[in-house]
Image (tube, rainbow, N blue to C red):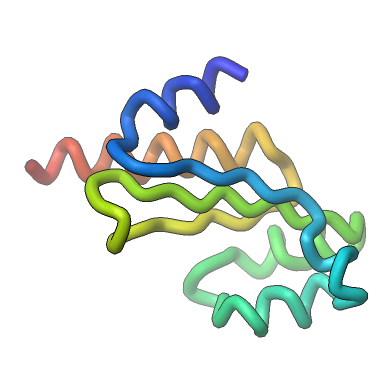
Amino acid sequence: MEKLKELVKACKCSVRVVINDHRDNCETVRELLKSRDVDDEDVEKEVVDKMVELDTVVEVHFYPDTPVGFYCVFHYDIDAALTRALEIMESRENRE
């Protein structure tokens, strides 16, 4: 929960965590990723394979500065997804 609180505090706009949205739409993991335009550059193959194996998709969608620019992290593990989101925020801060 601490990582989520940290991400929320760092973002000026919203943070969304959605888990297994594909199941509500009767989609496979791969169909969900395709519908979200997620490709090999966005998520490592090993992570996608594990998402498929577990039939689990964790999506962390966050808007650091404005309601227009956002990042989206996909994973099978919520803790790993939040860690990656925080790494993205940290790398943005280091560029500024």
